Amino acid sequence: MTRIPVLDREDMDAEQQAVHDKIVANNARVGFGPAIGYAYSAGVWQIHNTSSAHLLDCSLTNAQVRIVSLMTVRHWKAAYPWSAQAKTALKAGLDPAIIEAINDGTDPDFDDPADAAVHAATRELLATGTLSEDGFRAAERDLGYQRLVEVVGAIGHFCTTALMANVVGVMPAPDAPSHLK
Image: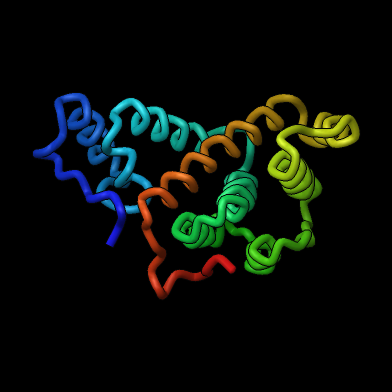
């Protein structure tokens, strides 16, 4: 049971219904997870889904987006998105050892230096809200400006996901491939 009830399409206003219908037409999520909360604000729902779509086709690899997602939802102690993102990360080819290292709060061993750079930038941004001069120079060198900006955008996206899931009170399935520690 969630703290915010699922909003049925019949109970939505015209703007909410339009967003709902567009999401359903794209085979996306309605009626569960953080989307339970998004449904109450058509504008927030639309922006969040646009952001999700962007992250599927941005300068970061899918695995890098999942590194950011896992680190961000762990930061906010969001159990449902953790389990959902762990499942998505596995499908993206992220090594289970990397997923569990992030869950443990330890530094994973990355084969790809760009993945390590995404992890380092995300870690510092979540810990401090910015990058030190050394952190910025490393991200500039290893990621470039576009991917660095995409990391910041992905953190913002997954902050919204985590916080909405926590407010809604949605919990992961018992058989999820990974549970937040």
